[in-house]
Image (cartoon, rainbow, N blue to C red; front, top):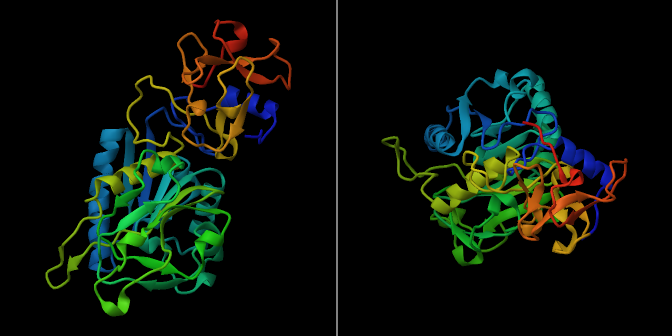
Length: 370
């Protein structure tokens, strides 16, 4: 491991960090209390019965999950609410079946995510046949380029978890079972984009994919869930239910897979700046401290020795990145049995941080915002 940023920056991070219990701060947005945040979902609900079916059940399911896991969910078809004033009150924005098409809405959204706001998108929110419609969104943010092809009909598949170290994928097995969906492929090779982190893709065991021989995938690499490392965002290439179009009856549910549902909840929590796991009301358990660049406060080398350096490092789910804010003021790392400690002891600018045996001294006291 190597130090990614200076110790003075880390000292400021700790002094100004959001809540320790897994909360990751979104720079331009007020940090919610632990276990609480607000989600604003945009949709049209006017095109293709399969997409409309997904919209309706998504609005029901996310509201229920919010009540169970400590976040509020608001859905709207009023895209004019995509403005800086409105977005300032939310930690996560969702696009269920479209994306903004006016300059002011696009500008507000781009500013929101560039300043740390979270995003979770689904299926049609990436669809386009011409990236010049919004190059930043299609090429830079999502990384897809134009739509290339889709499978038909909708099918349930086996997804390989490509990045088990990402908080959104925490605790998932090597493969998971998806819900039924139609699946998209894209012009750009996401694997070749250094900004893109593929979280899940079609597992080779799942081919062929599709029921129409003319719209079936027989082999290849098809990312399904991914994040852009420059933003707190996740895109999901699902959200299209199987339908009996003649009777307008849904034949499947996007929320029928418990494993996929866990992935979704962890995506939303991470996008909101919370810990990777499903969000629950605060219970005093330990969690990560994160901040600048989305990095975690980490004990170098996962050491347990007195004097081991503390640094910023990629979040990886290890015990070296778990901290508990004790009522006595210490930041305690259970894996090492040590507390965060200012060397010296000193309060001077540039003072190094380390772990040391806990002894309730002033240089081990840390105050975090309420």
